[in-house]
Amino acid sequence: MIREVLRMGDPRLLQVARPVERFGTPELAGLLADLRDTMAHLNGAGLAAPQIGVSLRVVIFGVKANPRYPRAEAVPDTVLINPELEPLAADKEEDWEGCLSVPGMRGMVPRFRTLRYSGRDERGERFERTVEGFHARVVQHECDHLDGILYPMRVRDFRQFGFNEALFPGEALPPEE
Image (cartoon, rainbow, N blue to C red):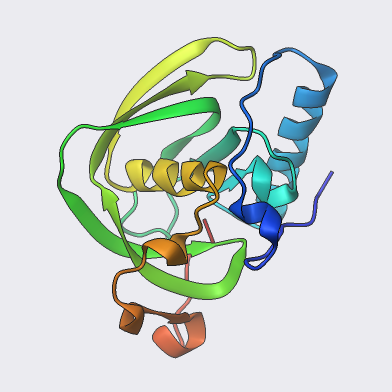
C-alpha cells in the first residue's frame, strides 16, 4: 500500500527509531511491502520507516543505472534492518541530495566516502557490505532518518540549499532520495 510520506516539520521525523526485535512477522512483511510500494510510486532512491510514521530501524534503498543518475553507479535493492555504519576513512565528499520528506529542494551535503554497513535482512539474516561513493551516500542518508536527522541538518553552506527550480533552472533532476 502506498503510504503518506511525512514532511519536514512533522515531529515524528525527529525521533530516534526503535530496533526491530522480531523477524518473520506479518507486521514486518507489511511494513516492507508498504515501503517498497511507496518508494516505487514516488521514484525514490530509498525510504526509511520513520518517513511513513513507523518508528522502527528499517530502511530500504536501491537505484538502477539510469540516465537521471548520470554519475551514479547502480545500488542494489536492499532491506537494511537495525543498521550499523562504520566509516572506513575520515574523508568526506559533498554532493547534492534531495529527500521525499523535503520535496522540491536540494542541498549540498558532506558524507563519508567509504564505509562498511551491517544489519539484518527481512529474514533476520545478518549481512555486511563495504561501499563507497553514491551507494555510501544513500545508506548514510537513509540511516540518518533512523536517528531523527534530515539532510538539511547536515548542510554546511546554505547558499547551496534551495528549491530545485531556483538552483537548477530548466534541468531534469533525479528523483528524491
